Length: 311
Image (cartoon, rainbow, N blue to C red):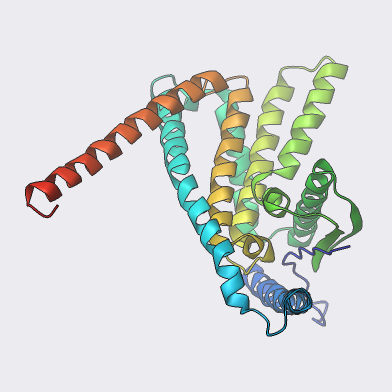
């Protein structure tokens, strides 16, 4: 059984006197250093295992590891480049529809928008202040590893070990792939839990109108919680990103987060995007417009090149 461990940075001032309170920035710096050391040790163990396996499966004389690995790295870079136009068209469509809804349809004046914004600002303020940092850090690590585990199960894998603490977490499983490795970076775990809890309450009880505003505030808190910790974690030497290539992983994370946000807004009661079908149709129109512009640009370059007698 192969093992996959995904440890996340965590904070705990080991050996610090009880009365000595450190700033949030110092705690995060300590967490970054510890996570980096653990990632390096784990990376060393993985490389040793893969080298031994390659030597065992290689004819006498061996094969250069870099020569064996470069096709995989090239494939990942090409896959990331192929996804970039999709990121551009999706961003263009989202921003155009959201700005239209905000400025022309007055979405920014709705209670849903303001309750969501209030929740988002509250969580952003907590992140920078460091209040209850240990508690929220544990929630983040728990949600991160549980998301890994949930996607392992969805892909018919098996989780044999699950560990979470304020110093980090990991799962041990017999299966991994791009989606399993990156799922915590684009699935807002606590937003999903909040949405499911709200759906159960709506089906089982007659909720008053105030619950709707509370739901949007919870979505603002949990979505911002997901985003601020994801943005904080990504630059800190994450093995999850290196597993499938950092460039490809970053492109997938961006596109997946944008698509999840579009889905959540399409499902909202006062959706600024109306519905998924309208978004998809406008996405196709933007893709056709962008593709036509690129084709005209390339055609102009070719005509200019041929008119100079260089062909």
